[in-house]
Length: 413
Image (tube, rainbow, N blue to C red):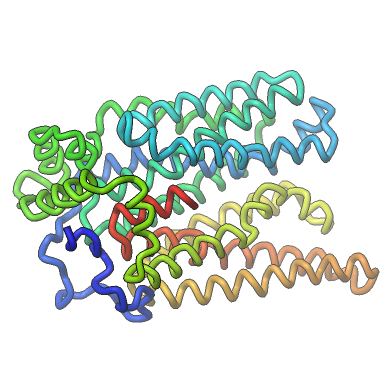
């Protein structure tokens, strides 16, 4: 029981953010497993949920002018449309934990994608502001649940030695969905863009029939034979799963003898203080970093700075993909802390640069530099944020807290 309580932490005083390489044979856990085709396919199917999230984030900006013109929305009314997805997301987050435990991770993703697709169809067929707002809200509810259950599912099907890298792929797919939506939005109208956003929903709905349920959830229900068979399939027929299966059983046994209140209070134990402060602090820094606001109103920002609203957002979105890939490749080379410090510094300086450009514009001083400073600042902010602050906080949560602690933190955040 105690072993599960500190899984991934090593000790309460061990550093979480190593600047050095964290890989190496000397520290290699005995329970390491290799990547299998089923593990890759299951992760890909789950990541369709992250792609859907990227589509919802990237939809507001390219659809802004079309929706306002066709439905006669004011700036305030469109602001409601753009922000109501976050309200739906908060409600989805409240439902996510219980829903994932009740019907399973795979069932939750399946239902969420159906709900999300219904929301996109409501937006595509909307004739007034109420319809688009309701559709956007429904998408937000589904996305709020998916942003919890997708990393939970990936964490539960991957072995410890691969958990961090596989979890970091969620942000890559968010960036891909964001970029594809921006690019498609420059070609098609807002109604067609809504229909295109249903493609990842359909892909996941179909493919979920061919992936296994989370072995951890099966063990929690006491379905031992199915649990062992699923875990063996995910690890490969020749892998020894006895140690990992024992760890999961110990964790489940601990949960059975611990109430929900006690598990919540466990977050406030002294031995977890450093890990919780680092993890939650990074998530809060990520949340208040301004990335969502920039993404939702990127077109408006460029328009105010007299920059092309068709080329600028596309370049911004496309830059996210290679930067996210580079982040995954550099994480083990330079360490999480180095990338986080570089990311936070770049994001801060570039945000200041954007603010300075509009300050010059308001003061009618060096107005000719406003477009240049805005483009450099916004592009730098996007690249800087994607370099570390966008995804690494969740990787740290997955790697340095045991699954139970990590899931509780995700639930509250």
